[in-house]
Image (cartoon, rainbow, N blue to C red; front, side):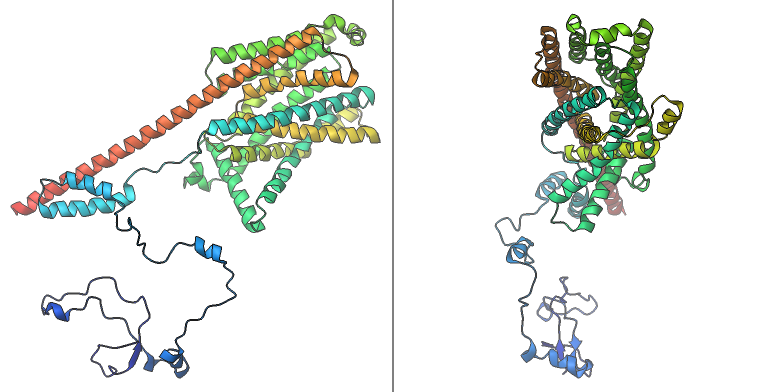
Length: 548
């Protein structure tokens, strides 16, 4: 409570001055009527709120006897939450008065030596204000050792994909050979359609991890993450979400087109395998189809601008040699399958080999297309890449269920594949097989997103060894020497390719960091040139003013 210093008729009225209304600026000095320094107060007069102008009930609340501070005991904030809030008082530590721009001030002080005092002070003031806004170009910090984190995640999904593939293969073979429900296209339609469950399951897992968030906030964050990642995929630029031009463009039409395009080649590859099963021998089927690793490497050089490296080429070639050793090394020991192979003529086997060869090329092309047009660019965080990979897998499953059912009635009418409902036992195993394929495919998409299509293709060849071990445990028939040697070649090739890919990713990461440093240095040099030009302009103005 203060009394007004004004000289009007209400000078004796009791006034109330709200705290915080005092101006931090110095009091105005009138040059026409100078006053002695003692008559100038250190702060400007407060802005009074006169109580006589207020209603009586409001005036009563502002009386000194009524001014008591009360605390609400029902405050929802706990002591821990309040302690996390920043203090409202000015810091009083040892470094509280150290200027944040001390280094810039020292640089400007050295730069202003030998200049007129007034010009130097103006230049120093301008530079200090300038440095608060443009001291350095912004940088986008990346987590430390991103490549190592990617390999840790990729290792987990590799193990998961291998286990799920073994389960899918064993159940699918049992359904076709033992239960005699051999519906190639229908099985492919169900297995690829099961991918639609990838995103809902992933969403449920993330929701459990983020259960403290409210559902609207959680959903808004998830949709924003998917949209920003899709913008990165469309533009192949990590900073696309922050661009005002690219941020206005919806990425979902592009993702729908890419989903249809990539799913077409995936369907060609999967359908060719089911068609070629009854046309060619299992050894030819295994050897030719797994040559997709070689085609993935070729298409990576063409579309992903990968370099032709000797270590990667040798690793891919060694893996393919291992596949041929497994497929043809113990051909004389094939007892039950020899009669069926003799019944197949040369023309039938040739047709089957051509079909599975087309499927091998299509599968390698599908892997590279997915990496090129449906994965975020290098430098994206592993978590974001995994989330978007499963989301794209659900888009593939949704496209399969809504579009690729059309050939089913056509195949039924033409008699190429008569549709029949499976038995109860076959239906149960079919559900296990389709869900296992969904787990394998989701893990494989994540693996390709985090590493490369070539490494993922060679990693898929490890399933040959695991399936052989599983057959040994189930049937009791041990692996032959050729199978063991071929699997050993595949394992060695995978280890060599993993190390080569790891070194390549580390080199690319180091190059990106060097390029970012060069960009920052160029921007800093540009800012220094601008400051020098402004200093020169200031000197010219000062010289002109002194001459005038």
